[in-house]
Image 1 (cartoon, rainbow, N blue to C red):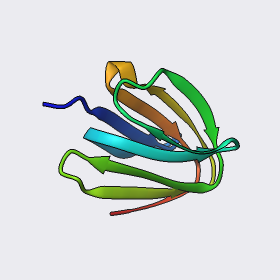
Image 2 (image 1 turned 180 degrees about the vertical axis):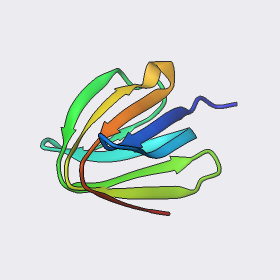
Image 3 (image 1 turned 90 degrees about the horizontal axis):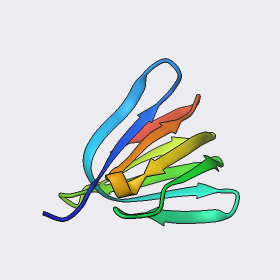
Length: 92
């Protein structure tokens, strides 16, 4: 089995998404668009208004529009666990 990530998207009041077996994630901060794969170095960044996209192990792409947020990841532990925001709109 190939390495995967776990993704948790949350607001201060609730968990929006808790997804396992994520194979890639795309996000955007002030430096531009970037991608995250399993094994990526740990990181912390502030997201700008953008669309967060991820693809699962079955090759299904999902997305969530964010006004802003903080993305913290530990891909070496197979997690991009914490993305926090106050305004969002998710879809499949």
